[in-house]
Image 1 (cartoon, one colour):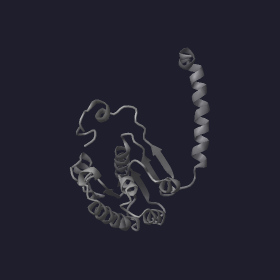
Image 2 (cartoon, helix red, strand yellow):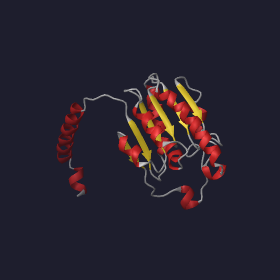
Image 3 (tube, helix red, strand yellow):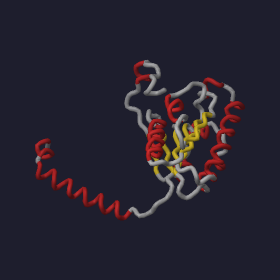
Length: 203
């Protein structure tokens, strides 16, 4: 099997066939519109992927809005870096993890204040990409009205991209999204080995 894979002639034929298929797909993908992406699941990498798209957008000179739900009781590398850049409107609205606050009224108030800011961004076509970090957690605990969120997302400007992160994305959000990725856990340093959150990796 490995010898067949390494055979130069066979490899060239396979790649030529794949190239043809991909060229046809690219040629047929003629629509241009804002994308709603949902990054969910129990695995690590949801926020990291979201901030990767923020970096990519900024590289193209795009204006980015970032609103972090839940997180907020501690500083992160993302906040320290991205909040200082031009073309970034950065808001940390959480009061910390729900098991730390233990105060539903406080969490509800913080989440709704955050969504008020998001709603303004979603009505402003100067924002090219908006990252809603850990929004799914706020939706899971019903801190924000889901119907309001869905309505605001669907009424946004045509070319505006939105990235939503957090585990347990509601099915209704998945249904209206254009791209959905579920992160799966294979191993995790904290859960499996008791290694605390590390700067540059989780913080």
